[in-house]
Image (cartoon, rainbow, N blue to C red; front, side, top):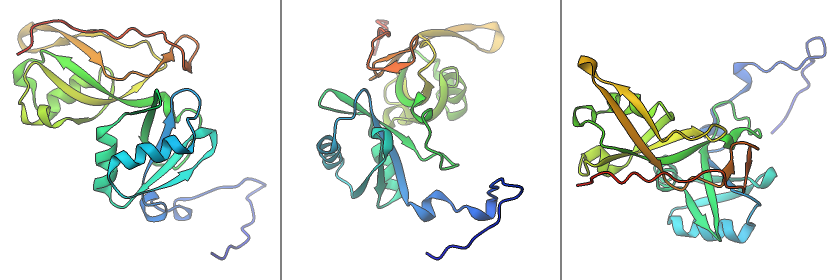
Length: 216
């Protein structure tokens, strides 16, 4: 790749839209991975990728992060939705490439977590209803297959990108038509050991809430 000298503007480097390319066209279909706590090493990365059963290339990055490049978008999405993954007692968290391509220290402070939303009123098991309810916790990404097919009515299981710097929410009010207020209870799956008081991984400051209401 041949490069050219471009004079800075008054000593400032300015990058425009024409100087960038879509991430997929340059790096392919990628996920960024990070283990909770100390980096578990290359063998842990190799072991967890073997279990995925898809073609993937591994690119070590700084800070103990790893870039995983997949053969197809379908493979990437499957691995992402099936996560998180445990290996040697550590959790491998995965994130999509940020749209600006900047991998900074805050990238893994908003992480995707599977959340169970118990006893969601049946009328609101559609994309718009579940999206609004799940948005109380963060940015909704996907539902699982059971929720999509409405084959398990006791809870909706939704992948939500959550800011783990904030104390987790266990229940919240949902205002329904005709003045009805529904108390929405939730529980988190595989919440990493993170102290939201000192803002660091590897320390427990979170007790998993388990709702014991009637299930059917």
